[in-house]
Image 1 (cartoon, helix red, strand yellow):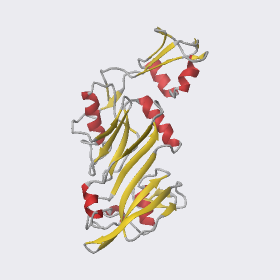
Image 2 (image 1 turned 30 degrees about the horizontal axis):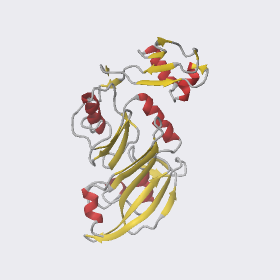
Image 3 (image 1 turned 180 degrees about the vertical axis):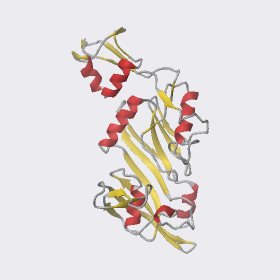
Image 4 (image 1 turned 45 degrees about the vertical axis):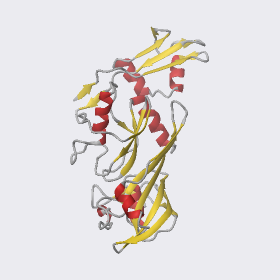
Amino acid sequence: MNRLLPMNNFTIQFVAQTPQLLREAIAAYGVSKRALTAIKFQGGKIMVNDQEQNVRYALQVGDCVSIEFPREQRSESLTPTYAPLAIQYEDDSLLIVNKPAHQSTIPSKEHPTNSLANDICGYLEQQGLAATAHIVTRLDRDTSGLVCVAKHRHMHHLMSELQKKGEIQRHYEAIVIGEVASQTIEAPIARSTTSIIERMVDSKGKYARTDVTLIGKGETAGVAYSHVALFLYTGRTHQIRVHMSYIGHTLLGDDLYGGDCTLINRQALHCAKLAFIHPITGAPINITIDLPQDMQKIVQQQ
């Protein structure tokens, strides 16, 4: 069952610059066919000069267009919670939040409550926004760092299109076992044949590429490690964890892939930077966040 959010609807407004059909102007703003269907059948409106029109209407230069999206529905699994959020960026359409380790991005059977998505729903409700949590860039439960969230379905669609084109840059930092050289890893990733959770490098898998750059190296408590920066060209499940394990440099704390847990009790992986061009404003968005304390404690001994 879904809960209909009883708050204000999201609206796009613009002035027609050229004579064209209304549907052509709407498509130019990136409104998806699915969203148009929702507008038509679920309570939205398309207005021209304060009069409701259909998409076949012929716009003239100077016509004022307003697209009102229907109120969004929130799944019952996304019960709002009200924990503080570490917000790094916010505008009318986007949130970028620093997720701590040991918190799920979305609810799961193992962790049905207190996910980042639950907290975001609570935050948006407190702001009086008709929105649910549209997660754009998801992180594993024990990975810390930046998560991008759209406040409404239209922005989620626009950001998803950026992702498909590889135009959301995701920069990570990790601490891995041993001394690793800077390199590019290109190795296809597939589901493990022995686990529903694990992934593995397999020729039948999907293409995956990770760039690895050495930042520093050290040794503590008898464990030699490397501090590396990683850039993802693709976004396969567990991509960094699988690729680093594949080349013999498993992440510290990553017990799923055989990592040493002496120095840290979770995979030492952090999304340190998100960069993209805002699909509505056209402004460059470049957000960075420092390593969390558990990883800093290790690398500071270099």
